Image 1 (tube, rainbow, N blue to C red):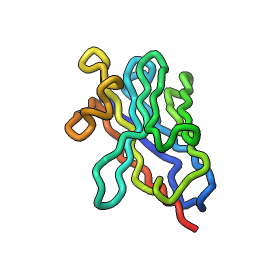
Image 2: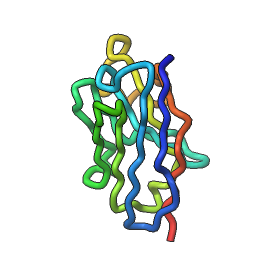
Image 3: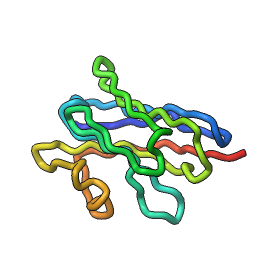
Image 4: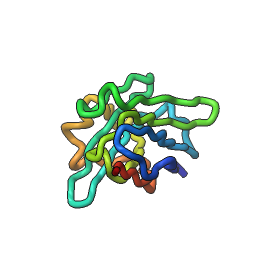
Length: 131
């Protein structure tokens, strides 16, 4: 069974940092495309990053230079390092996985996100950026 578990969220002041983790079981992260998606109350889900099975990552323009993806192959975990956080980054953050044999997700990620389905989707972790 494919499973993703996020952790690492919390309350942080503007300018602070958090590191979210996405731990996979039932499959290896480096064989799937992995996305981070966030959703704030009353808003549509927003794609934060998309990493393909080769490790190439694209970022939402609003987080470029502030957010960085790391992968720990031994732990089968992906990390989202978030620096210089802003109040508008507040949301529930999810990681999601797609088998590239079914869909080459990253090239169409932002375009198709509103209707995209995933092979695995975590439970989410809350990030709140507030003074």
